[in-house]
Length: 366
Image 1 (cartoon, one colour):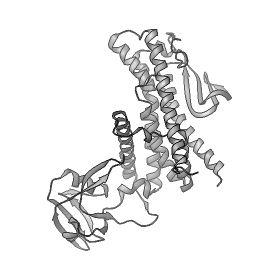
Image 2 (image 1 turned 30 degrees about the vertical axis):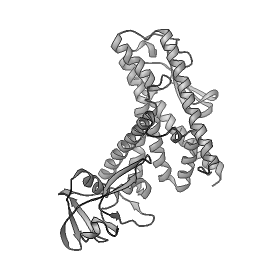
Image 3 (image 1 turned 180 degrees about the horizontal axis):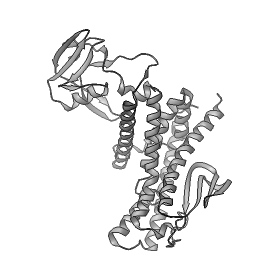
Image 4 (image 1 turned 45 degrees about the vertical axis):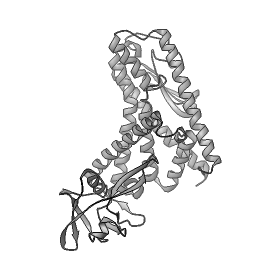
């Protein structure tokens, strides 16, 4: 397929994630009786529109986002308040908070169903490496596993008496339990009890930070091009766990960046997003859906940041109203909104700057 086609696929994938985010806002707003004046995929000049069910449905010129314009709510003019019964401003603060939370929640729900679809169809290794059977593929020399005689094809049944179903559970249980560690192993028709002490090695976590971790020196049995199959109940468990894992990863990333533990050079922009989507699209539909799930979680969590231009900032305004029982003053609202747009613009510029640096450095390839 041509580069243009993959670009169109990436744009469609991003539009789907934006659509579900805005659909969350739209649905909650309609439940509370708020008039939604426009539902737009994209920003700027409207290219196509259709009026239906009291709302104008539109596609706009800049397809890098979208918005739901509710009666009495306008980010471009934060001082334009409307307290009519069918307006956003006419609703109680807790109702507005639910409307604001519904967008990020829709992104998380979309991610859950994408993970579920992947699991039900058969997950490629990149999407489910943690869920390999607990069968030993290799034993590293001069490691605790080698010293107690673990062999390839051994199946680990339990760690410290806790049954093991997937490979990821082995490392989790090793981390939780103190030395010595008791392994229950199946070798052929025999069940063995092997006791060992872990080895501490230096490695890097998902944020490329140096960490120390405990290992026993084994790796899983992997077949080239392996597809991991799940029963329906296992697929639900996989989707739930992967959604939680992605949410935790994004939240920890934001925290580490805000505290300076992870450098600002790791902030990516729209070029990085499209590059990643295109690369995964080239590998096939399951790969594309997998990265869409992760980006959808990213979109949901980042929108909860306490920046006035985002959902999280508006949630703070409504929490202030709940606590103080009065609206934020027009002066404060105006200044905070300008600050929010400036901060958001700065973050977008930083992401674009990093994207360009990575292109020049050879880190991104079309």
